[in-house]
Length: 267
Image (cartoon, rainbow, N blue to C red; front, side):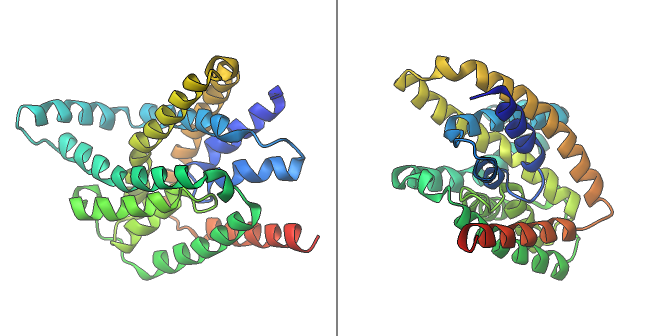
């Protein structure tokens, strides 16, 4: 893969992972529009690792609190950090199950522009309707085991390109009445175990197939660029949602979905 493609895809991933417009969908679409060979799942995971680093850096206080809370749980003491750690684990279970199912089915079959177009449009409409209809009364401290699991189910659906992991999680949390910034923050934190699991599984498969070291330099460059872009995107999204809603992102999804349908079906 040439350097320009690595840079462009890494920036796209870093920016779109935390905006509700689907990073995986964009990573599939750009090679189509620019005439590039599909970068494959391995590079997708590499840039996701970069955005994982962005989450760890941006929310380092929460991460340290969860690590300390996890050790406290071992000693039988439940702290706010430990409770958040438990909820993130619960929220990750559906994604692991659905991910294993899709892996056996073949995820490449879903990397279709038409699939992305319809998921962009459908989930964009759902996001707008939920955001406009539901109150903003809850914060992260109101997350429960049940709500974490349901939010995790929404995250699992985002394994289908075009859905948007952050968008699906935030939409489900808005349905529960969470404030927009809190919905975004929990969604971003929920990416930690999900991306870690996906990266670990893909990395293991690459090592087993003897392909890891051949692609390691490109993957490292991609991860670093995605980390910087992702850090900036997190800050932008949290700042935006303190005083604004999801409408611009919904419009973007609808327009992009419409363009994709026209491009691949009628042009």
